[in-house]
Each structure stands twice: as structure tokens, then as C-alpha cells.
Image (cartoon, rainbow, N blue to C red; front, side, top):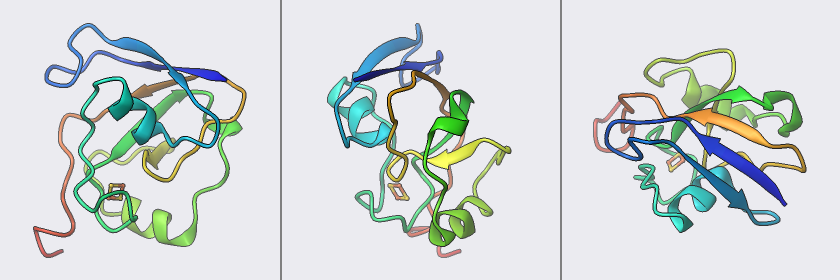
Length: 112
Ligand code: FES
């Protein structure tokens, strides 16, 4: 079981939080289970980008993003080298530190 440190975010977790990740659980699922309401407008089907996060530590330990995820990420607000869709990224045995960007664009409802 790994830990995920979520850096402070004004609305979602002003103090920041450290959560535990269950086996085969995505970052988004782990955050929601712990009360951090990361947006997930497409119900985690890799069709929006509202669950975009930036991995600040432990990025290399994650599986590579699929082509679909990469294509969506290209349209995400505030894209960085270590950006991922949290509904697609499953932590392994390494602890992670992540940041939820200030804005996340919904590719579904905004018709991009
Ligand atoms: S919830 Fe839509 S891409 Fe992750």
C-alpha cells in the first residue's frame, strides 16, 4: 500500500492531506474515498480532463499513460511534464506527491 500526499488546494483540501492508496485503486478513487472531491465529470472513463493532476514526486513509478490519456492531457489546463489523469493512474508501491491544478477543463460539457 502506498501513500499519496495531496498538496494544499484552496477548495478541495486547504491544508493538504496524506491518504493511503488501496491496491489497484486509481489516484482519483483514493482521493474521493478520503473526501477529496477531485472532479470526475466523465465518471472516470477517460473522456474529460477534469481529473487532471500534476505528480510532484513519484511520477516514474506510474505506468505510462495510454494514447487516449495523452491526447486528452494535451488539452488540459496547466499541462506539465508530469501531468496525469487521476482516474487513469494507479500508484504502485512508491509514495506519490500530487497537486490538483487550480482549474480543470471539462472536455465533455464544454464541447472541445
Ligand atoms: S474523470 Fe474524466 S478523464 Fe478522468
